[in-house]
Length: 257
Ligand SMILES: NC(=O)c1ccc[n+]([C@@H]2O[C@H](COP(=O)([O-])OP(=O)(O)OC[C@H]3O[C@@H](n4cnc5c(N)ncnc54)[C@H](O)[C@@H]3O)[C@@H](O)[C@H]2O)c1
Image (cartoon, rainbow, N blue to C red):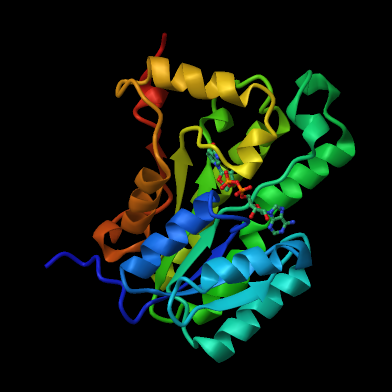
């Protein structure tokens, strides 16, 4: 019997906007594996759509959280302490940069645009880990979502590449610190997937086509493939893995040309 059963485990997923969100694929897969889910939504605008999705999960919790506000992050974990008690899995699947920053020359990145992208997409993992830790009394897993542009240049991805590089560094520093509490911290580096966030990236469709043409598997990945790898990283199947970035990209990252 492999330790894939998440019955009795509680998971909180940040970053569901709609049914195409990677966060939703992960949340529904964790729920199928037996976990009780909490979903957060960014603002009133998304409350209804996220609540409707949450209705498909049994006994789920839905909470507001704009990750640019430390107080809102703290409130999420206070509410989870009351409703769930313990938290075992935390998924951070959140990123934002303004549309102007995701096209044109990188050298034109504005100070404000840089600050916002790094704040929402990278910094937010730190307070989430900080406030989650007191509830992760039995250890557990924290997972974030990254992209190959943290290491290689993807024109159009611009400042979000800088944010992903920072995020991956945070994964290592948090993993080193939280390991003593048996809390593992990893990132999953997904290939291009059609989502709301992806559509805002200049040249996204070219990026997707090139991945499909050049990757060893000669195709794009699916939402389900990301969710299944996330399940592995969030379950005890990966109990010896922390501080890692797992590429789920049909192998694209190994190619030179
Ligand atoms: N789609 C891809 O091709 C791809 C590839 C690799 C990595 N990723 C990463 O996956 C993650 C999820 O993105 P997605 O593609 O599912 O798109 P998405 O648009 O469905 O998800 C992005 C989420 O971030 C949330 N968000 C933005 N600003 C926020 C804020 N201030 N407070 C709280 N939440 C906020 C949005 O509400 C949304 O739910 C992101 O980190 C993204 O960079 C996506």
